[in-house]
Length: 125
Image (cartoon, rainbow, N blue to C red; front, side):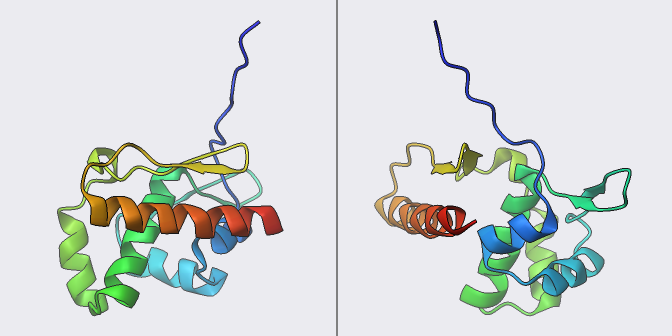
């Protein structure tokens, strides 16, 4: 009998904070600053983040913390960013982080490092 793996559709702000290494208050601030980051809310009013939201958060994090963009500069870059067309898709499934086959060795190395960090964090949850 085949085994069906179910991807998580939604993550809480606490889970996203642990996965991305971004504090909850920063995530809430980024929602106000970046139009593309708009997690839905459940009936209780709690934020529910999708994999798409997590990709946007990781892009914002990279732009601000690694590439040194200002918030205004990051907003301009994000205008043309489409997480649905991002070839660096990261899939979080049953506590494991999956990355696609990437031919660019530098990008592949970076994604593997991100995956290792996220798996370490997931194991701590």
